[in-house]
Length: 556
Image 1: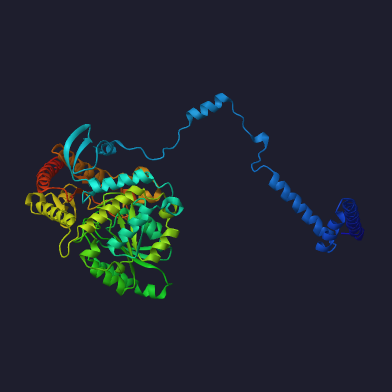
Image 2: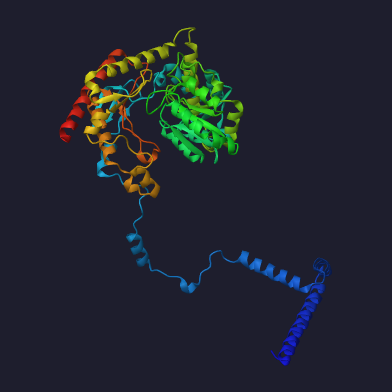
């Protein structure tokens, strides 16, 4: 660049600076004429040390900010807008086909909708049943969780009605926000006292209880070791906790110890984290129980905590119905967290958790279902408290509670009927223990192989698991699982014709994290008589053999 050009550029910049300075002087003069202008000028000078460029920059930024906040959030060039006529709009709406919220039920699965039983009247020992477009009276009910028959007890009903008359049906709010009433507090005290715990908390739904409790105490980086036979609620609870999960073989405490031993080096070197073992007192999907005494010894040895789901064992196991802890004479404080259901032997609905008072208080502050869900209806809490009171009042020193005595006798008797049948053993296997009020039957392994059925359905590495991972809902269907479940339903339908209602597993494969086997299930209660049990066995054994024989013949 020549010297003349350089000089010219410099003169231009100097001139521009003089003009800017002159413009600034005029702005200052204008501000001085305004009321309070001198104050503004002095403030600007003191703030910016007579640096006009800094002031200009901030003014520009202020103008940009004003324009930005006052401008429309969504700006579009009018020329880019497409204006449709009413006819074109109507045609587009007519052509639009929304994606389905869920996959349609296939023809192969329609039978499941058609065979859902409808009970007319209360859920009692004998019911009026609508099923398969027919109505059957006086059916003996083996499909209810009301193991003690408390849902129709006169005192339970009267006390519930009195509470409804006094405070209404619903609690009308979460427990922490006007949802807790005196009957809720009384039940918390009653269940904690009944189980020998420091404190308790109640939930509006039993399924939501483990799903809310476990994430309160397990986070990313923590470790939980879970029995691979636990129910789906515990599976999901462990999953949404985002902790590290290890599965040990169902009720195999030797395998549990092997896993704990293999983790010792990592646990010793890694960060301090929370560590839990999770199992059930009476397994919902198997009808058996772990050795609680040894389990407590193992968790103490390896410094883990224990979460025990006693939904099916409270009210059914032990001389007075206090669950697996009473069976093994294990103090409740040896079990850090006990989860339970009020929708089983207590004959009502809802869930609860008992244990250390600090553990319970932590849930009051952080449990999702407690903080954000509506409180349990007051009359339900009163009904459960009445059941606990009846059980406590009937306790006898050194003797079995009369309510539990009838249930235990019926459970053992009914199991023995099936276990002693050599003919039935060719077709089904009893997998539940005789102390369980739920009798679980599975097609035996030899027959499964001859029918070409897999050992189990779903679980890690299965086609269902892969479809779930990819989000292919259409591939969630398993034809063999559907067929086996349909055959069990055929047995149920034939039993209903002879006035016996069993049930079956209705587990959804893509909801389960673990392998599944279809089962035929009979829920025995304390109010069933020996004649009821004999009739149910006679009908069930006849229909099981007939349906499975027919299946074998058609398969050959």
